Length: 92
Image (tube, rainbow, N blue to C red; front, side, top):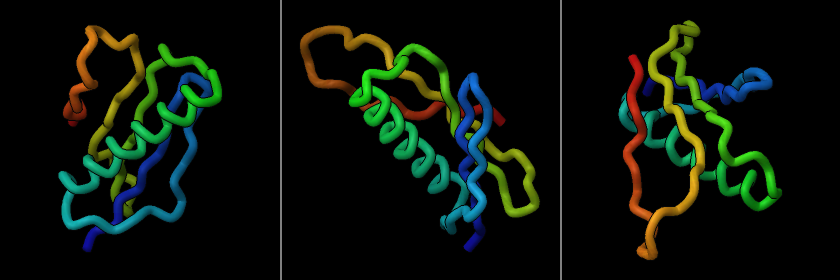
């Protein structure tokens, strides 16, 4: 299985994933990046951090080539219903 690396970018800089993890394909890696993004937002919200700042998970391959950026940020909840899952945006 191919190894993908999930680097976390904020306005302050880049936190590099030195270990990476194996996934069946890029689509599976993209879903993992979306899960990481949700976990990051939940942690930041729990700590009272800045919620409006854009962040991204930059997925690269073992050679360091950029494959996909998953951009995410938290905004205000709109409406009274439950939150609807949002598919990650793709930038190739």
